[in-house]
Image 1 (tube, helix red, strand yellow):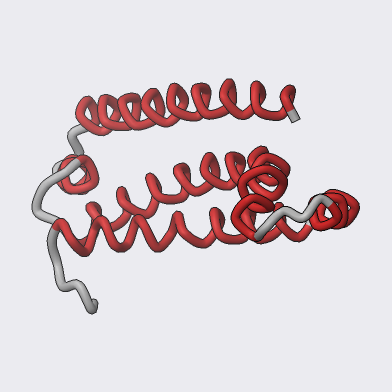
Image 2: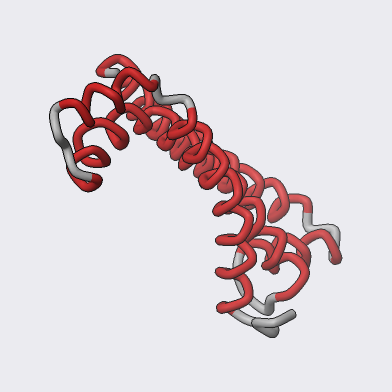
Amino acid sequence: MFFGLGLVAEVAFGALHGIVPITLFTTNAVRNIRPVFIKTARSFGLGPWDLARTILFPAALPEIFTGLRVGFAVTLIGTLISEMFGSKRGLGFLLMNALGVNNVELIMALTLLLVTFAAVTNSVFMAIEHRIYRRA
C-alpha cells in the first residue's frame, strides 16, 4: 500500500517477490564456496575486488543464475497477481474481466499466452544455466 495503486505498485510488488529468491540463492552460493579457494587467493595477495572478481563471482555464478531463473518466475506470478487485483490494465486485469463475464475463449487465450511466455523464457534461462554449470 506504500506505492498506492498503479504501475509503480505493480512493479514494486513483482520486484519484491523476485528479490527474495535471488538474495537467498546468492547468499547460499557465496557461503558454499570452498574455503581453499579463498585461502589460495589470499596467499597470492589478492585484494577484495580481485578476490570477488576472480574467485567469488565465478564460483557462485551457477547458483546466482539459478536464483535469477526462480526469481523471474516468482516475479512474473507476483506481477500478474498485482494486475489481477489492483490494476485497470494489463493481462491480469483482462483475465479478471474475462473471468467475471465468463469469456472462456479469452481466458484460454490469455492462459496460453502466459504459459507460452513462461515456458519459452524458462527454457532460455535453463539453456544458459546448463552452459554455466558445464563451465563450472
